[in-house]
Length: 328
Image 1: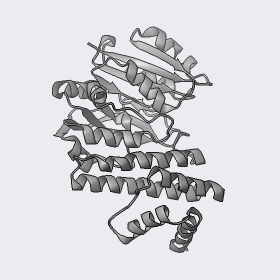
Image 2: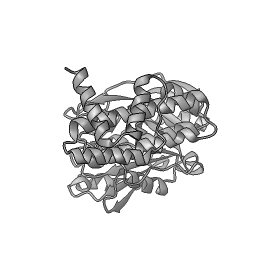
Image 3: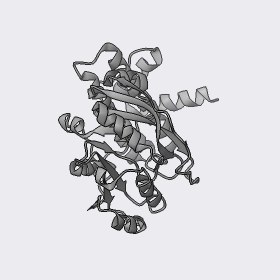
Image 4: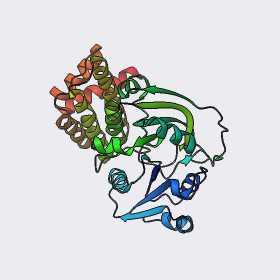
């Protein structure tokens, strides 16, 4: 049986994809133990040319080609093809630390954990980090329930799926997939996984080298991305209505949504120029989260009241005035 499926989405990453794929094959794993599913999401550059020779050298690589449909559909299609007991979804512009997977996979297979969350390091997109940037000898891990992991470890600003080994049967049994067509699709997906997982491992072991500052889906904020962000806020907020949540977990979900809410309006006020576009984004948010109601301090309560009850143009004026006042 295939132990691991590695799903690599590829879309116009000719500068990075070769080193990313090379890092997958620098893990000291036999080809029969894992498969690589490359999903070419309609690349228009030389991405696939850059890795053609590597593909030819390994029988365990499968290539799926599709018209451009976005990262959510790309990952979903890769998961549908996967045969491994565990799934890893690295980004094609990042790297895996050399020989980092076998230790994590061994623990995953031994414990049958639903999720195995590892560590990562960040690097500038202009740097070419060494695959051997770290020499790891000791692995430290803690077994937790999904709820405890959610409460203690999920940083709402770092909902990165590429740092996690997912047990494939867990994803299938819970019908977990990415929302098609949305940027920032990692956010609701990660929250769902944590809240539904039973057994998890939080492992202090470096897995990923994250190129943070190259052009990517998060480096510029457009009207389309703002609309998507409103949609992911809505999808995450809906999880609060899950009946089995404890009050503490429900509060953490609200806190996480407030983080996303704050990011949306900060980015919108600084990147979206047309007043009409801003009003449409606010209206879209209201449609996505009609029952938005933050508790806690007065500022949060006022913000949710204003955004849901006041005309969008008036709410935006208040936000802009408040920003200028605190930065005068």
